[in-house]
Amino acid sequence: MTIAEILRRKGTQVISVAPHEGALAVAAVLAEHRIGAVLVRDATGAVRGIVSERDFIRALAAEGGEALLGMDAARLMTRVLHTVTPRTSVVEALGMMTDRRVRHLPVLAEDGSLAGLVSIGDLVKHRIVEIEHEAEELRSYVAQAG
Image (cartoon, rainbow, N blue to C red; front, side, top):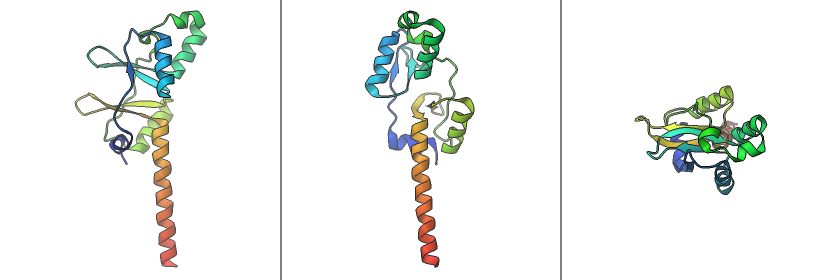
């Protein structure tokens, strides 16, 4: 199973914010959409980074609450992005998330354009369904063989 199949089921809509948007506005977007991260995209649509709940916690711990409130997305964001392509396997993507300790992976098309965003929840949900299906096939096989 590949990331492309996950995106076919979940959709390719990606919530994003502009680099100049303030911390409260970013937090409001996360809360409104009930998501854990949002991409930061410039006026051309190019991805510049990602702001996650972890970025808020790190900024709060390092700078304090008042300073956090004065930050914009460009200052809050993580600039180093770990990405996958639609052809990346779900198992490989889960491994990347585990190894790199991230919960969200932007999906880049072959031409480098943004094709979607997957979360660890998306991938785990898919793996559970896949494993349940395999178990049911095994039960059916054993029942027919016996």
